[in-house]
Amino acid sequence: MKIGYARVSTGLQNLDLQLDSLEKHGCEKIFKDHISGTKSKRKGLEEAMEFGRAGDTIVVWRLDRLGRNMEDLISIVNQLNKRGISFHSLQENITMDKSSSTGQLIFHLFAAFAEFERNLILERSAAGREAARARGRFGGRPEKLNQSDLDLLKTLVDNGTPIKTIAEKWGVSRTTIYRYLNKLEEKNDENKEGRIS
Image (cartoon, rainbow, N blue to C red):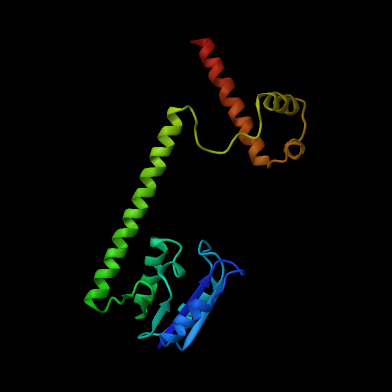
């Protein structure tokens, strides 16, 4: 049985082109999503995958209708193949069916591309971090409290103000306040060691 899956990113976009192509290809049942491909939970896709049985084929109009990226696409196709369900994309005219040697070849090529894409992202991220460090910028969230806030924090704690009250003042959690107190303590210890040596 051919099972169609169609997706558009927003309610303003139209599914007609995809639905017409899937019906023309002989899909007996079609599942739909009006949701961004970046969302991991896609109700229509989940229903299509649950509906499929061994020997069925999930059909999409184009590859990007199925997966968020190459890695996601491979993961979905792998799940289908484990259940004996093949996959076909109309626009690219690609069939992925691990029971055939051609299907296995295509699947391995896609897996290699997914790994290549992942490595490129890692390399670009590392290069970006290195370039930022060279300019004196470091990653991570900006600190919530500045130096004058830390001085006030220390005064409030020394005067016995409850941590909960202090946390509410800055709109942070008690854990954040304790983290800042630990940093202040470490800084004091370093200063003491510096004076002793």
